[in-house]
Image 1 (cartoon, rainbow, N blue to C red):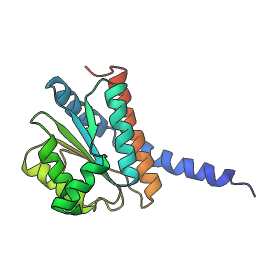
Image 2 (image 1 turned 30 degrees about the vertical axis):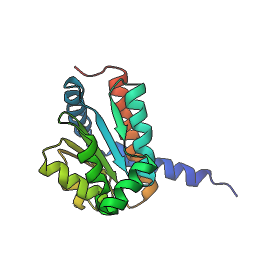
Image 3 (image 1 turned 60 degrees about the vertical axis):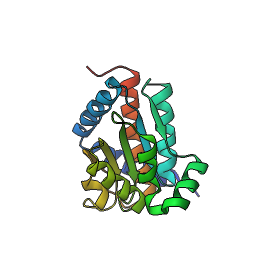
Image 4 (image 1 turned 135 degrees about the horizontal axis):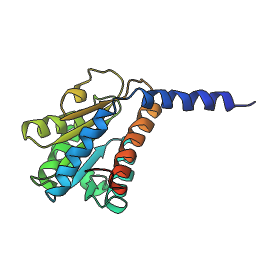
Length: 183
């Protein structure tokens, strides 16, 4: 059996999601991250599951390839410590309180936009006036999509399509910094 047609449709689906994406959000994201970098801040990127893997990859690339200080909360000791003490729904918020400084920004990723730990962290960022970029999918009016300074939404209900689109969007921002394409 040949699966080439499946692959071509799969590829086209992701291409279509990205091709219809509001690229002005890239410009706004670059400006927010550029302000953070100019003010000696750090970019923190957090997600769950596959989005956590995206966060790790993009964080490393920001730091290594683009010379933008970045980190993530993907340390198992940190996650289990904060989840044990504050509950799973609050561990990200509490990590933000413990690790971030006034010039830092957060990028929070949730494919569904409904992950309680990510939504609670976003609400904390909004209340505390911490600059925030959110990435979500599924329903356009999901809870996360209304909390950031910049809200990037991928209109799909397929996790892998959403995660791949988020990954490509974020890596393109990394490359804008790596290639010094900003003013």
